[in-house]
Length: 235
Ligand code: UDP
Image (cartoon, rainbow, N blue to C red; front, side, top):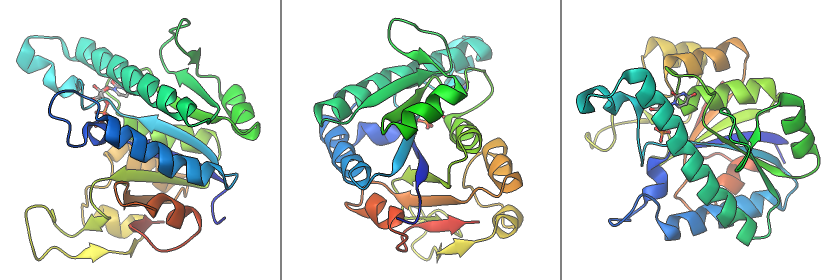
């Protein structure tokens, strides 16, 4: 195993899959559980940060006449809904999990306590982080970077629906070129949209590599854990 301790960021939207009726696609949830189970079985310590964009984003608030900060808290609560769904699905696959939240919600999850999170990982439990950092004006990308630095993870994996970082949007431009590797400096200078600036800077300052990869491609997560080339490595 190339990486021993990993923080995996999954967006809320990715959970939607092809579901037209709801926010969470059961097929997508099932697929993610299979992928996660196979890397867990290799003894990799895994923490997952899940987004909430399939339910609510703080950026939507003002257009609805909702205060921005209130909207951010709504977004954070949305991530807890996704985290609970993921936790339940993973447990159905026999994976021991702990859900830790950036906002105290004692009935459904533990509060985030760094030392306790590390202990869970050491004991072989998969940790899911809900409610982001617990502060407005942040994103779950920043949460993934921050938690990865705090937990001394080897890498942040950003699971997306594209297979890496391109020079322009590959969903809009057929001639977009993919980067296999980038330095933080190159990514910064080229203004490539990898994570929001807070998240990106935190990784860069702490020399924490990021891999952007297609989480929907079967076996990709395992490939990365094994050190095979997939997606784009920013280091
Ligand atoms: N959010 C926040 N602080 C955090 C994490 C998230 O305020 O630490 C809010 C923010 O409004 C964000 C929403 O929660 O828009 C959902 O998270 P995000 O947009 O990162 O989800 P994703 O795009 O990954 O689905």
